[in-house]
Image (tube, rainbow, N blue to C red; front, side, top):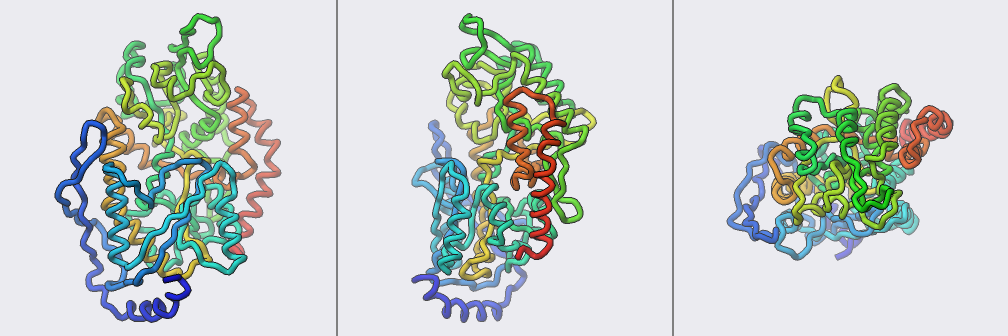
Length: 493
């Protein structure tokens, strides 16, 4: 049955659903599974364990769509990312949780979940799809998980609904990320967000991964204690890095065949700025304002790029020697690695002993540790304006997020990230710190002044002259902000 054929049926049902009492608003939580993990990391499931939700799912009882095809568009600037809404036929705990979540949603609301993916390194695919959708007068997509650059372009072009106004989407509930709502809402409107509904943003959150063996050899002490004491800073990390630099093959040059204190890459300068609690731009009094040019940012650039000038640091994007960064870290060729958490499975089934730390602070005076996202890899959840029925999108999105909190998030966090990819309880402790203090940098996402790219160039070129770079692109950034704020302030029309 097509979406158009369903029109009259659903219209009648929506009227009927408003007449059904919601009772106390509580919905019994679905059964969570207790996995039995095998030696190869797969898992079977035992009897379900009922989990009582902390909050109610406020959707009318009896809401049923009788065969509606609910379509989610997933795009990414990668060729093979994980897809949080589609499961593979495996015995892995995470796939099983996604399957169970989808089955509950499909059976409860009478829908089938269809996932359309557009995974490519070519930008603008989501924008092109929704433009074509509107031009043809179609309503093909009920929701999207869109790469952050694409989702921002869509929001700024009037293609996305304000989630604050979508029926039944309750962004204040715990299954939606409150930090995302805080950081991405512009003029009181939230066009995209994340939370339990997706684990993709968690996969592409930045962290510091360290080699325990090298740390012990260099007598660096308890790195976790340094984090707990609030003393894990760029300066402390730099001092440790400079203890590790070795020409392993004796060819009188340092390349990917040798040993380093830190493996990094261009995006990590912006990530380090986010680690200091700063952003390229942020929301202030509802509008997006430039926040990059301050003494803290200048200090981060001087410290991090200054460290990159030392022979103990290896930028894997600009290297010779033929050894990739994954093999380098697995081979014990680096004390620290700055990467997103998606890298962890690459080290899981090896002899490498590793731990996880947050991104370092700028100084001990900084109140919290902060961690940002990989711009090219992260995706955010949204609902297009041109949907068949906004209420349907709202109901299914809210239900999907709710049941993901009960099923998918435990499978991802407790049983996959912690259960399979973490080697010690101390790393679990630091992961909790990381996820509690993530920064959504709208200046990076909206490409304000192309500063995200320009910061990458500074690190690539080992250039600490931040001020000249900032001034060069200041006018462009001001123009970008004027356009963005003007569009949203006027009602994005």
